[in-house]
Amino acid sequence: MKEIFKSGYAGIFGLPNAGKSTLLNKILDFELSPVSKKPQMTRNRILGILNGNQYQVVIIDTPGFIDPKYKLQKHMANQIQKTIKDCDVAIYVTEPVEPIDKDVDLSKSLMSPSVLCINKIDKIKDKRKLLPLIDSWRKKRDFEDIILISALQGDNTEKLIQSVVKLLPQGPKYFEEDDITDRNERFYCSEIIRETCFDIYEKEIPYSVSVVIDDFKERDKRKKHYIKASVYVERKSQKGIIIGENGKMIKKLGTVSREKIESFLGKSVFLDLSVKLMKNWKDDSEKISKLGYND
Ligand code: GDP
Ligand code: MG
Image 1 (cartoon, helix red, strand yellow):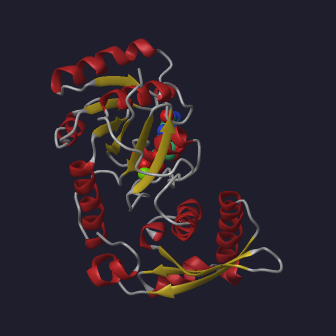
Image 2 (cartoon, helix red, strand yellow):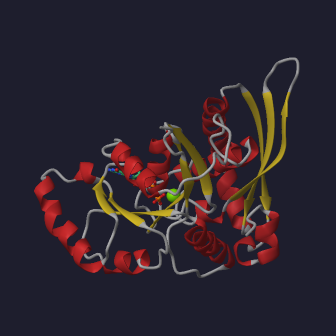
């Protein structure tokens, strides 16, 4: 008897910093979605494709649930709403702490069969301490499955995949076997530069940054990729901070980003960065769409 092939979309949801992007990367075994200690790093839906024996799961990482205060955050909230509607299975990621009321409320907005992942269990030495927490969840929201995971270490991520596959409908292969995402390399290079901003700049700076790739080409002779990128900021004073004294910070941004991009592309890269001002872009629909955030 021929086994049936299952496929579909699985959305990853949760509060900022729950570990959603880390989970996607661990499942794919690839640094696809940018991760940061600081919340609200993810601005776009990031789609990763997992092929297995008799299944294909298209996993969508979303920005964390937030109360939108400006246009960019509205765009982020729209991305979540779209994914809620489109997905066949929902994965709700939460941290192993009480109270859980806010999480419970948000998880109730999910419309598809849902699996709860209590993440970061590597932080909990005595696992018995998790029992009351699991109990609280059981009382407040009915999930198809509750799985204790460590997205960072990969504990129980295989079990999660099995649980998701069980809930998927029968369906076709949506993507080719060797595709891992639906976005192009340009997009990921811009995300890597933005992620590096989260690593090296403080306070509000990384939140004010948007990165656009202006040119991306392979140079025939040296086989080195040439990438020209603009780092947009919201205010004039931020330009100086990005550049730093004697260009020290932009140099660091360039070096760290280039190394990450080289490892992502598996090629040597010449990275040409410039800093530009786009006044108050975060609260201007036209500007955010120019910067590539399209609903
Ligand atoms: P997101 O906002 O939900 O996408 O969260 P991220 O994936 O960006 O992760 C937020 C922070 O939590 C990062 O510093 C991660 O390294 C950390 N993190 C994620 N998963 C785990 C985990 O399983 N264990 C621990 N200890 N930290 C984690
Ligand atoms: Mg994220």
